[in-house]
Image 1 (spheres, rainbow, N blue to C red):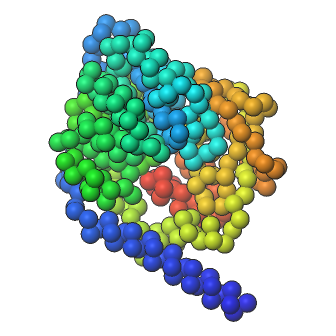
Image 2 (cartoon, helix red, strand yellow):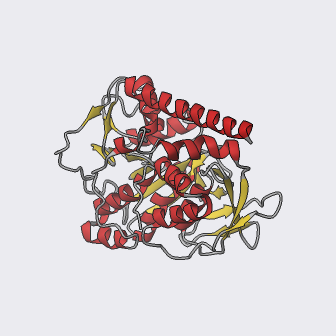
Image 3 (cartoon, one colour):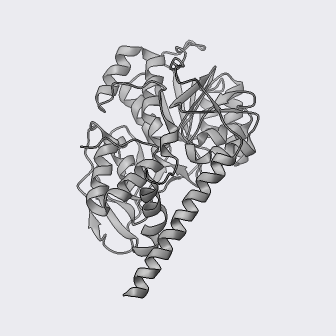
Length: 379
């Protein structure tokens, strides 16, 4: 027993050192440009109908080898629910798009080449999620081409690194997930990276902060297309009254006495002291897209679990028309969650984080919230 206790202490000290070393590295990097605390929150410019279309055309683009699920699904779902645009779920190449960090595979409605054939003049809006291969030449060329055609490019979370890699952010203002600040400063120094903004608008380029910023940014996009009242109706379904750019990204940086325990537990200690268990998530046709994405994504970030969608067959279709293939776990799940609902829920992030707290404790739930760059509402 004394040996085990000593090992646990050493692991905790090592995890603390690793987290603080990362935070110190970020703080010693070149300082990011910041807006004054009293700056007026930005708004997306109103939609301009350039092609005489009945409704704007929105393309959400995924990289087939790995695309962040929540970054992709929330904008698609919010804009589909709002019924203000033609929304297309694309893969840069034909075939399924792996939804990271989950096991689900999205079956896109078309490839980027198919989209170009149908809309040679380009999209009105292009949504760029975080992807595994942010230097994919085909993806970068397609995003750059859409930008040069006049589309408004909207990056979600570290989709901002993809847009920066495409060259569109040179000399522009932008933001992304707080965790990649040092990478952005080092690799893309010709972009003015802003802190403490939920989203940044620079003409036809819009960028958002960490994963949870996908929701308010998508509502702001609804407002730009269809007005404040329509945006308010959509926001109310998720218990949101403020979708402005106001945000405090610095609160998520690891610090002693504030959030270090959550970081150490979720990103180090859970993997060292707990076996990764399979979590079953029952789904059926018509499942709510946002609830599905957040449940699968969050439970696959705990350091203790991997979420699997349990569908009646090998695939299923969501409420907003997305089709997913659902690989089965090798053995029956060790934990079974309630079925994902078929309607939007208020406080969707908090609902999932509360279930994680029940399963794995408050430190792990807080760690997942920090990964989402989300400030939990204590109940």
